[in-house]
Image 1 (cartoon, one colour):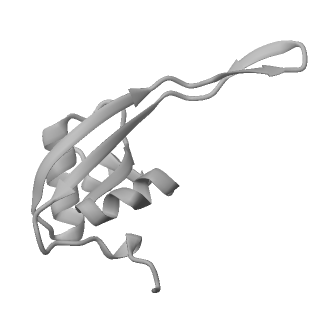
Image 2 (cartoon, one colour):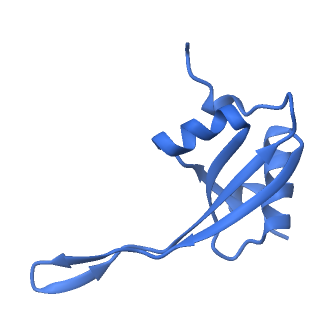
Length: 96
């Protein structure tokens, strides 16, 4: 059994992820081997919120030229989590 902190690596901080907060959706970088059920249970365990749905997407790492060789960034798995009405995750809240 994986720990919830092993499933959820970190939140994604971007303009697009911040625009989803108004629709009560949050974006996380997750472990590539985790499934939607594990992600849902991890978010509910860490932040004590009700999760309605989890959408996942796999992003291929970009290929970059490094002087004489070609390097590759790591592949990522992201989870877009929709919370129930009235629930929120504090780490995303802005100071406005």
